[in-house]
Image (cartoon, rainbow, N blue to C red; front, side):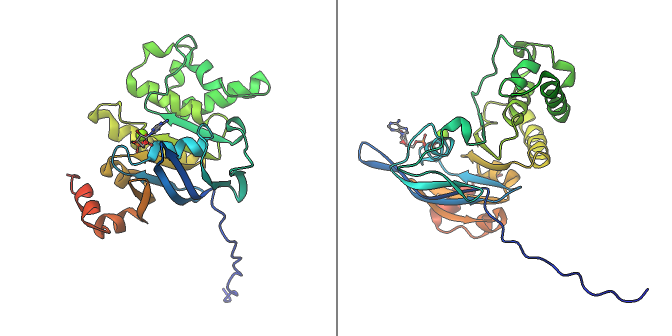
Length: 253
Ligand code: ADP
Ligand code: MG
């Protein structure tokens, strides 16, 4: 075959799905989140990693819109959604949430739990619920109640519920810490698979370096309210910025 001209490639600059700039929040005169800037790119899992009390959850709550920052900006897909004067309400931010204790509604079936945040015709809702329960492998439980499921199964229903309205961003705050070790690796892997297939950008908070190494495309290491190092897991692990970072990672076995 005759040689063909090289395809002309179009370079489109990637807009971060989520970008926070100089986010700051103090309690009682003490900055617990101190000028934190961070980008989460589409299709990526960014891990906010740091010891207990360093300000991870407060950062996530500001992004979710349930906590107000003292200063700084939050952008989604290049659009400002929150600064100190302008504020898109939490329910209109297209953000999904998952926490360790983000309990399912006990009086609703699995199917009703997943459908909870959905709007529109019943048929479309049912199809979306089926699709998601299929993805987490729990279709057979659609008419069961949460108490009839194991902890791991409930967690997967919570994932399906959070993803049902097609959030642009998933915020996950230590979502696996309530699960026993035996289950955790499997659920982490499954969760990653579902998140990638659903095209949500993920900001995952954890205090476990091992979890960050397993799940993240990008790690932002946080200490005392500040991001002290950021990069690919391999680089952060192999070239810790100081002895604190080094000892933090040395717990991985
Ligand atoms: P992490 O999630 O990394 O463990 P947090 O963001 O929950 O950390 O908390 C960071 C610090 O801010 C902690 O010292 C915590 O006690 C403090 N803090 C968080 N929320 C409040 C609040 N509403 N009032 C006062 N202090 C708070
Ligand atoms: Mg926390």
